[in-house]
Length: 154
Length: 154
Image (cartoon, rainbow over all chains, first blue to last red; front, side, top):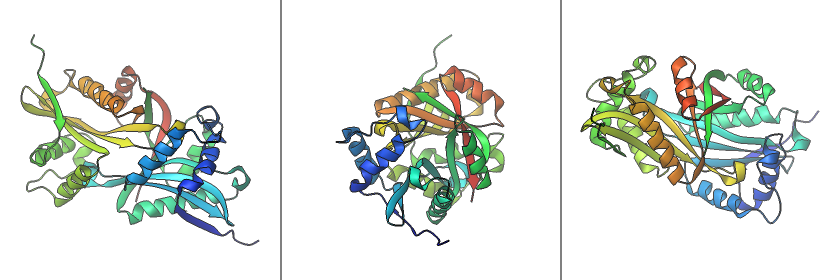
């Protein structure tokens, strides 16, 4: 079996429809997103805001030259724990043809490496309790469920 | 009983020793922080990084003209949920003479207002499961513990 060729890179505006389609093709995302074309201008505004913030890194991965996944990294400076930087991972999605084949693990390993090379000493994420398998997956990567993730919709 | 006078404002470099002292004067912070003077230069470097990032807001509150508390807000742009901004609250501390007198609630109400006025439609935080009372406090503010907060130290 040939090892798949994977290329991680910063997302471009041209990737945005495919990224939004990935966000929407998800149990929880289906009711939250709007993948119709032309794209809802809220997504392009959000894309611009991400690109303008040097501490945000919206990434995609191509596998065998096809867009296969996306994730967002946020590098957050802070005073706590001797002024450590945190890396935060958000909005991870894998396109359906590429699921259950090790790509998720490769994406997280890449993301953790990015956090390390940015000088972060902690990586964090929150996972919805409605995704029961996700927590075990993150634990297998070394994450500890030490915290409650509290959300308030405004 | 007179209502305490509270002023919320952006932290200044001159506040940093008092902020670090608050971070250290805490069950979990005591072993993580270094409140010796002169300040560990990691804190000043972190302060600079926070000030240079327009999406970070390190705030302090003065009560009756004394520094009484601190918190950090991060405004995070993202594609998920129709490109919503998230407000994230981190490193909340109250100086010991001001605890258990409603200041924490006032600080969170102020922080949530800041998130709203920045256009965030979600406010999030994680709370260490070693702080059993904190979760109930956040729930009383309207937060839901819908997620697991996963951390990985590098």
